[in-house]
Image (cartoon, rainbow, N blue to C red):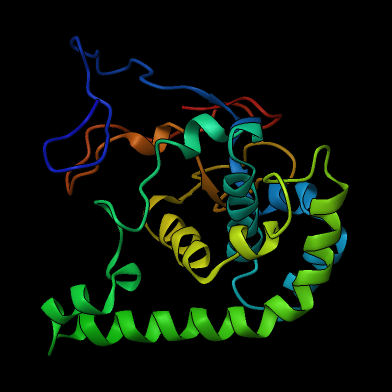
Length: 219
């Protein structure tokens, strides 16, 4: 549903029992560093891993950017269409414009946001020249051409899209409380499509659990 403060969330239409499962997702639906590495071109994964930083963040960010660039052709299109854009509610200060950041002037949050933006910009400036050839080749080889027509890499991996992808991870990623199958150990950083629409508060009344270890459901 839409929320009065902006964005979307999930609400209960009827009472929920204390031991009831509210949402259950198959482990295969989770977006993680492991799934991103399996989806992205090997040359792209190799370049990202050479960087040595943000070992799970960067592959997931690139998968998000690629799938958003593919539009309706992406298997993640329904979920991606629900996620905030940079001009909407729910983005962290590191993704705010310079004018918006002025409201935080003189605070620690202001300088933290500026440092985060600078680090991301420097990382993109370093990596994109190495990544662009492999990304362009993969886009050209995709059925019909990813994103339709030329310029896919420039659109899909723009500075704005890097900022957007990092903001999604900063605000929506969760740490698995237990292993959830191959490539998903306990503590793995994952995005859980649609589960991430649940509202959050300081005293949550839901618990995240993993059922089974062979690819069962994250509830």
